[in-house]
Amino acid sequence: MNRDCQFIIDLQSENNKKRNYNLGWYNLIVSIRDLSLYNKGIKPHRNWKITPLKNYFNIKGNSEKMLEQLRIKKDILTNG
Image (cartoon, rainbow, N blue to C red; front, side, top):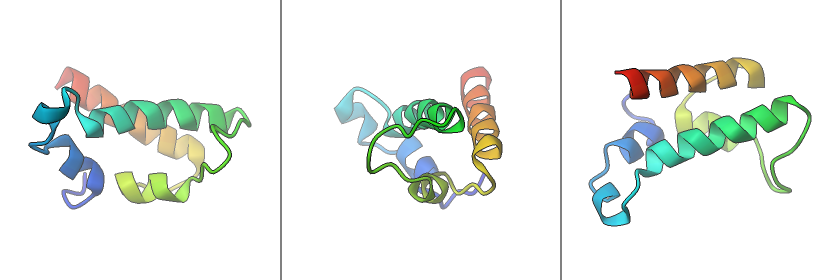
């Protein structure tokens, strides 16, 4: 994983204690949901685009490969 991507920054942020939730973890879960919908042909909401997702997580590829990479990141974070 690239340590300079916004996902890692949000995951390790000190502001997570003030929010009572981890912004990086939240974005990961929501992005997996959104990509799953997108792969089925459903756009999650009107203004949803895939490019900001690629930039936030610093991943490349089509939507199926991206979904696989995000699920791998989730498994790494949950299982250690």
